[in-house]
Image 1 (tube, one colour):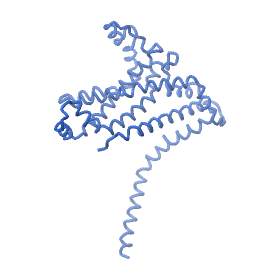
Image 2 (cartoon, helix red, strand yellow):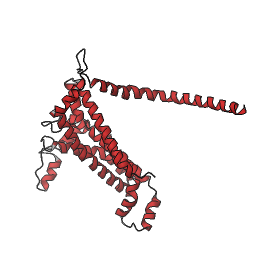
Image 3 (cartoon, one colour):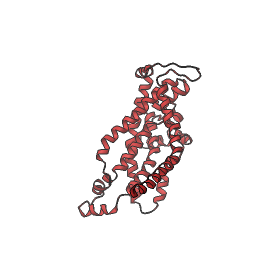
Image 4 (cartoon, one colour):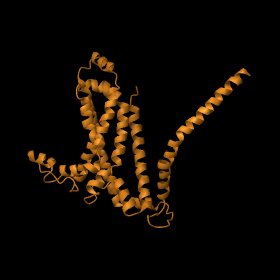
Length: 303
């Protein structure tokens, strides 16, 4: 009886604590449902309809939208462009960010200054910087082509030629991503115990490369996994630079998935078809993240 009398107040306290926890979490759960789960469900449903903005009704068409995607040359082109863009921006931005983070970490003075300078692109609006990038990439008066001319190289029309526009956008994407990735790597480098470097040096790791290979790189495993995930997601969902600088041109050479979805949904008003594209887009993101975790997570060392 004494045990029951003791357990009852504890159970009541636990229930009261659980109710308070649910009440505190309720606003976040409501926002999550309204702004993430409900729109996602709406996109899934609309992907099976022929709904168009401005028309009163719609009908369910099954998998017709998805069948149309298979033969849609614009969709295939945008998918290919997105893959090329991601393949360039993700690895280059990660390698540059890690190199810059290690240089800043090794710097004894002006660390805050360099962190701020390299992080500025993250805080800058691409729309506001569009004029700057258009000037930098200008085929005749742009500084980039002027620099190439100093070495006897004829600079291309970066944003106006089908063969170079995607590479020009990739350069901007790298500029955008490096600062954010650098901050994450700096946090990872700061968390590595200094004793490990001393122990590695005692064991014969005299060069910086040996210390990097034996200590820094393994200990940065969780950070690298997170940075890679974020970089892939950000690269796949590129939109602002394409919309602001190229509008998908010339000849759809810079049209990417999100821009194609935007065109179909808000220009041609084919919401059902755009929703089907969005479902494919989300599926690609989920598959990429899943494969990445399957491949990289096994190699990650968690301290």
